[in-house]
Image 1 (cartoon, protein in one colour):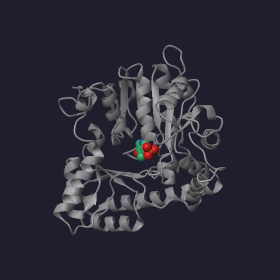
Image 2 (tube, helix red, strand yellow):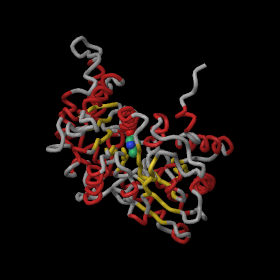
Image 3 (tube, helix red, strand yellow):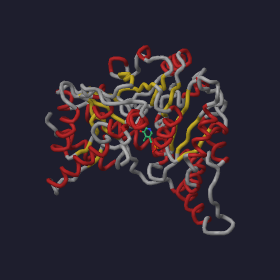
Length: 409
Ligand SMILES: *Cc1c(COP(=O)(O)O)cnc(C)c1O
């Protein structure tokens, strides 16, 4: 028989989100009358922009005509879209030969892990979006879980906590490490400053590291002083890859469209170009994003599309403000709950001192019929925290806040 990939055997507990879904299902089965509201998974809820949807619909209908039909496109993406992404977001920082269009940032992260193989060292912000570590366990770059349950062997965890203003101590990172860095951050909502990112880039260049910079929430940045891409930082072109996505700003979580930027100045130890291997990954292991989704991506980047995306993001940011106000009041305040909401990301990150994340998760599910996300699922430093997502219909957010206000902790 075929032996199991030890990477899968090494993964502990289920992936965070299926475990949340399991608890929700179990609760719903035993409480059939409960009207459960989810402030859990970071999934978009508001309708697509009509302008963007129409571009996809027109393109799809065109595919049913001889003149409008197209089959496989360039694996790296439609050249108009690559150019448009480069001009819109990376003017003077990266060009279209460095932009690769994909079916999403998560899928790109998984494919990026094939670039580095099983022998690379990795470092992650703690807490972090699970795919950086879980994907590395599957490829073998991270190995078995530590006996004390605080993460995996082979991973350097970089605590990002209120005490360090959610920016890690970089001195813990060994030379020649791939550093996964997400800003604005999921789950903490923290957005790194120019000074902080300069430190990160300088560290990476000095120590032979590559930064995999996840900017999936760049569109939520409202503070004009904060960088929206790692390529705003001098020196980043020799040490960073950026992954990005239409999922959150354009509501493309189900449509599927993202992109990565791999500068031509980024090299492996042997002097070869990372961009060249990334091109190989895209042509050999991927076959290009859906052409319908790419038509939507082009529409998202014209004047109307950009305006529509900003409106959608504003809506979620307002939800976040409403949730953070609720958590700053009443019983929460009395219980000493600490609330972190930056207004530059879609998540409210709250610490329940002296409590375990899953215990608070179960309490809120049971007493308020609200699904949240336990911070401990994002890494050891997330223990005692709960992530509240601002993705939801306004009426649901308001109802959830009403229920939360009545919660006794
Ligand atoms: C939602 C999310 C993504 C999503 O990517 P897709 O483009 O939908 O695959 C990537 N990174 C982070 C941190 C996210 O929260």
